[in-house]
Length: 305
Length: 305
Image 1 (cartoon, rainbow over the protein chains, first blue to last red):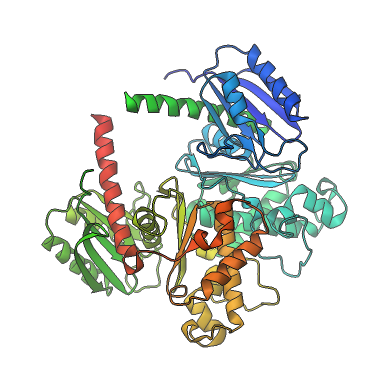
Image 2 (tube, each protein chain N blue to C red):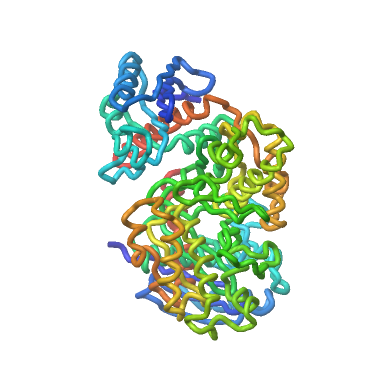
């Protein structure tokens, strides 16, 4: 087996940025964490790290979004709209690609994490999987046949509007949709509903039922759309809230009502799982994106030869 | 340009079956319609048609579902569960493939129709599209990067549970989910809600608002999941109900609330459109499935050479 290529990865998050030089989870040569501040400052700091590294043959960037992922679009590689000061319409992908001068992959942080969990983590060996993060927002990386499900742009499962928990008429916290999934079950929604951060809620707080119901609807939607072979759930709301996994699985099973009668889905404990790569899912996702860009270039040069 | 291959296509529906011998919509050499009765009778009649035809180099089958679409599964090509007498666990794809002795493609009728509309119809030239049928059920064929979005099995968008129209608490007609999309907006739901078939409803019947709301939620979900470049809507409830298209588009736009601010989505009249292939979308879908199976075999033989 050939050694995996050495790839430089950048996970650009809303508050911090992780640069990683690696061939995979067991071959990480360097890892540098930077704060995400103003764009010029942040991108220059990333470039200084890349400049120091030698011998990588591809670059991968897994960014917070929304981002432009269409290579034919004039704004490819840009962060499109974000409330984060200075970052709206900011070029990230093309700037770093030109700087590094190697094949470069660019996608969302959640698609990156999904690809990493599928290659090395909790969904290892599966070609059809979803990675859902429930934190300051809700995002899903959906992979079908080994490729992200993209169209005009990347998916935004967090803004689906779920059927409501019986009797719950709270308006929700999403500025666009009120009671969409993100407006009901992301971290800020938990705080907005009760005035208290979710990590302070008692395990028997009845508000958890509404969160579990909304997340069960996210799983219901995933099962009926991408039909992933496994769903990995991470993010600040899921991680460390051990009682939430069983509730969310139960909400999914109840909502499906026996529809999609497949053994993989019926075994909810192995179907809906936590991430295996922990805090490295995002940075390693950038490594996969870079490796895929390299593979695509080799493939193209082979085909046109 | 090479002439398109001659392909035999079978669209197997719940009440009728259309066999077609064609290279495309402008080169249909034969078209035979058969009633769908008991499996043995129906499949034998299809085989008699195939037996008469000469010179086709592939076979495509677009079937009512749910079906098993995983080529590695023991039941690949079977209709899995259906209330239709005799058809549950019925092999269709493998039996006809063996009979025809040519490369054979097999998928759902809605994925077939989506592929046909993308190749020759209302979404011509687009690689990321959805075809939604709203008739006796609701089904969606979602295509991303030119390929159906599949995982454990095919999608079932019709069974998503939408947020309810304000004040509407009708229980819905789906035996699994009650008020899922199909239980609110498919033909039988319209009849169940009012006792009167939808084609008898006046255009100003307030019940249309609830149907349009549910279908707007289907579009909302499609925009945020597959992010298709165009959505083609057909089926008995849509076709011939001209006032429904503007209402469904308006419901989608209102529900998205400015999220996914892309010009393609904003221009709802060109984003959500009726089919262009009419009654031939299904049979021509089978032709595309057959042509793709042929292409895949040629590709594989090229790669291993």
